[in-house]
Image (cartoon, rainbow over all chains, first blue to last red; front, top):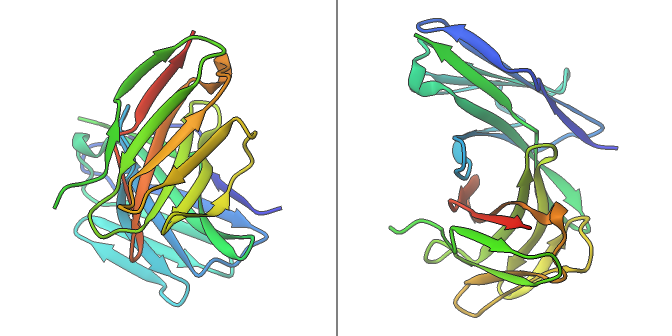
Length: 114
Length: 110
């Protein structure tokens, strides 16, 4: 069956370092992959989308890679700041009954320590 | 441009009751998706509506239903509430490339 896996353990890093989060998927070849940020008690906020023909995408301090051979996406935050502390979710469109439904991973909680 | 609006923000209901949650998408967006989020299960897809038609449905019991109106506003209904229905219910309005989520409705069933 199709699965999305994110490291459920929290990631603690020192301020100023680069945080790297991983999203793996199985039994599927998505046309694109999305990353979201979620703060406690709030809805997720869209950050980036990367398509299957793109290897890398950047937005300010964020960088996303997409390796369709490894079936993996890496999400990097450079020069991390305490304000980056949040849960980060990856999401993929999965085929369902002729349409696509966006399915989310369980997320990785990032804690940036001052 | 206004974001996605969900009402109410918080709700406490008793087991066996029913509840209706509302979602107003971003103006001009015709697709609305609903998700249930719990600490153990993460974001679980409930259903998607497009132009008043349910286009997709997740693996939830028939107690969970929804609809969409001609102005794209959507409602979801849960009947015969159970304790396990306590969750954050999120709706999302889709745009080219991603979702814009509302702040959610926190439902507590006691």
